[in-house]
Length: 155
Image 1: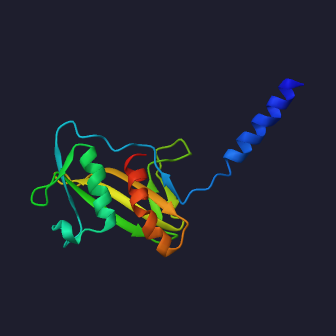
Image 2: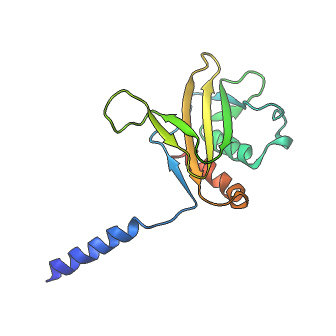
């Protein structure tokens, strides 16, 4: 009898945990690596060399990368940081595939999506890429962006 009640209780808890709602979702399976030695970064967008012109997104990226042993250098950076907002329905190539082959997967963006990509300036290869999607409206999207940056860079 007790085992049956425990089984029912466990089933209810598991089914309810699948219904939890959040303002955004992150997609990815790799954390951004902490720099073993100090590495410099800069934002790829023009007109952001002066920190007075940074958006809240860029400020959030700056704080998180500093915590990972990176420092800001817009003259000779090791890493370029691309921060982009994408609308619903954009197809992104992903290294994650359920097919078990070397074929790349495709993911369609849901809602407003925030993409952060780190590119090595020596060979112009993508070092890391992460993104998160928000289902909220445009005004609420700007409010959750700094938290989205944190969750993307720390996933």
